[in-house]
Length: 139
Length: 139
Image (cartoon, rainbow over all chains, first blue to last red):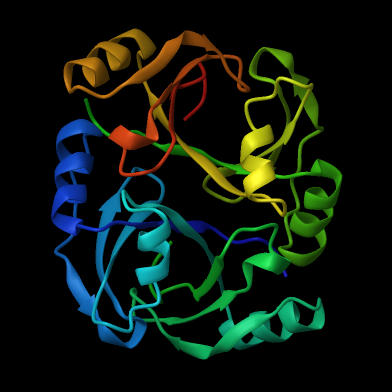
């Protein structure tokens, strides 16, 4: 498998609204998507574009959100995960498992509408790593 | 100011050698630079290329390395900072300070040989943010 595009970095925030103001007014982002709920992942999501990659702002959604713990430990928010693209999600899962890396659950639909999975940070040098299938028609 | 390219994400590691093996053998990176010491920043550095951005592996260098504390808290390593490019480092410093964001020290030469500064994570949604002047002749 070849390392694919760095699609986005996931940044957890207690408030997407406040983060949008930060990225727009201080960091100078000019293309910011509409926030939307992703109930299957327990997060509210908003994509901020840089010229070559995206920032995925994620805010806890619902009581069972998997990022409540992260925000409890990091009340101001912070870097949560890194996401790389692959051409075939199932081949990638087989690859990572064959290398002894722990894939967290079955591939499921992610924020870009394609299949994704996460790899345990303990097998990725402390970095929670998302692997996503490249959306058709991009790049 | 406009948000520039996501030049790299900084990933701290207790061992660049072990991280190179991870990025090469498990994540499939095919272009990995030679590690080098950056004594002014107290880190050993190695760049791993993805098709659109880089991963900057950083390992503590010397007793006074600013990332000893990070590694103590995150023994396996982890996401340390995010770096965006700007056309003019001094104009960027003036911009951030004008927005009330704390710039950490004066611009200094970074790992790509151009001037950089860091912005306090408390003013960046919990994300330690490096701002670097785009190297001449790139992009």
